Image: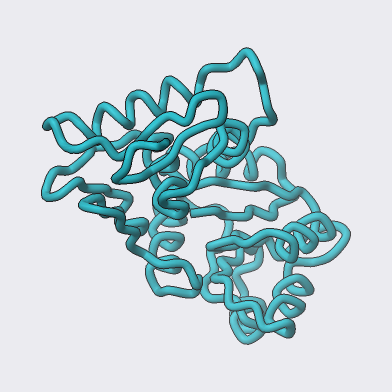
Length: 226
C-alpha cells in the first residue's frame, strides 16, 4: 500500500512518514502543494494525507482538481481550522475524512485503515498465489493456514511478488520500491530480506515458491526457473 503525505510542516511530515512506514506502508512526502499535486497525478496511490494550508497550491485546490479529473483515491484532509464551515467545505469538495490538528497518530492510523478498507482504491484487498494468501488491509499473510508473521519489509516484499507472480523481479526494482533507494552495488539488503522471507515461506518444509534468478533477481513461481 502506497500513501502520499502532503504537509508543509517538515516535523509533522517526518512524524507521519515514520509512523506509517513502521506500520508497513510505502510513503512518499511532498512539502508544498505544487509538488504534491504533481506526485498525485504521476503516481498511483492508495491514499492521500493532505494538509489544506499549503504553499504553492492549497490542499483544497489539489482536492478539487483530483475530483474534477475523476480520481477516486481516498483523501484524508488535515486542517488546523476546526470551524464547521471549513470542514464542510473540504468534505463537499471530495475529501473522504478529516482530522483537526493536533491529533494523535493512533487516531490518524485508524482513519487511514478505515479509508483504505472502504475500497476507494482499485487495488485488491487480498492477493493470492498457490497456497499463499495476503490480506493487505489487516497486514497479515498466510501459507495455507499458517500465519507467516512477517516484518514490515518482508510484507512489502511478498506483496510485490504476489502482484507480479511468475515474473522475474529485479533486485534494483525491489531496492527502489521497498526501500526507496537507488541502486547500490555494494548493498545486500535485498538478498538478506528475501532469504528471511524464503525461510518463512518454507519453515514447515513446504514446496519452494520463491526462487533466485542468478544475476538478475527473484521469481515467485511453483516451477523452478530454467
